[in-house]
Length: 614
Image: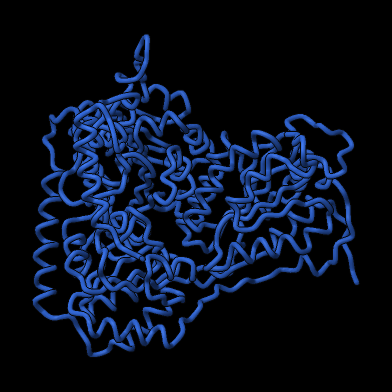
């Protein structure tokens, strides 16, 4: 058997470079590159190997380990999970900085390969710098934190362990059902150790996407339930996008007349102009979609895990017959649903054949059409604003941004009040134009995520909408975007604190406390100049005092040659009242405040609406 003598780090880089997939009919490397922040745990081993392999597997430098992992995850999401990236750090804080990002990828079912440096397998120099010592377990390192937030975890203690670990990690990342983060904790002495690897291990390999067909009995049961229903409703999730089933779903909706509502991850699978598109559903849903859910006698989830924002904490359609189409059986059985385990595109195609000649009643289609028209009027009203409007609402800013960018633009957001407003109000015309991280709702994802989106689709304008709180949490990858020539348009909405949680706090009966800056303990309120800060990171920037100035600023941003940040002050109390639904946020059973007691009574009423799975 022919062998090649390589260090373990060199073997890892060579193997990663040899893995390929087919995207849009062309064979391309599965790993688009490596994000690396070097330290003593990875610079000598992996750093040397990445330098030698930099032409086949490019390496990018970031400013924050969590941020670079967010960028890698956003890239995979925008690429519909067809390609992924690698992230490597040193041991200690560099590694644990990525744990939040790993959890985000795990929750959202998104692939990323994490390679944190680890302590010495030989233990010769223990304890090394940044090493955690467990008094009762000598095998523990901080990288054990990755175990609950990884779909696959391994610690590389010997060079030859890569022969099994690497294929297992990639198989996990590519499997539609198990897709998520894989972590290979790489002991730093092992990275530098040599081994005689089989030459065939590094041969070019082409991985194919698996499409799991559903069981015929499950499909027949779903088709029969739809044919028996008078008002069926489809809830489309991110699985529709990852399966590339948008066109098939649009065709099914047209021929069968079944209306489609969208989760955060599923928003945009149907263009907002599609006649059977009801818009967003749930806590942040449109009135059209939520009314249809209340009236439906059958709910069919496709590619969604039905989290609480989608179901209104199980109160939006508590007693409706429910089917769940999902490639992952764990999700297909949720909420007492009748499961249809299979790939979304395969199921939609099979379902279309079974429903041929069947259509919902014309009066249902007409009622939905009227509801959609009414909702579109609502969207137009709440997103409108005068040019001289100062301290606008988030909705008015969204409307101005929507009008100021092209239909091909991608909007990126993650946390706070903006995702709810965007879910209701942003009008997505083209696939991939709406990129929200709302499974983990992670503050700080926005700018780093925008960077990953731009790497996936450099030809599209990427517009990041972010609140001042998230901007302050993580903004460093703005400098990375300038350094890499990956232009972002960043709109910072400054409501001087955590306005979304402040509203939730007051809605549950408490006074404003510790959310807005003015309501927090302080000696002096800092006058934060976000535009000046953005300039200090190399971006172009300006502050817009009104909606009219915001519109003009967006024109200059689109014409700029680098990342451009526009800041506008907004009202922290205004939010879109139209649409929406109840959300289960537990209120104290007893309190000295009458407002809390009133909120508790309202909460108990909401709990009584929930789906009974007993």
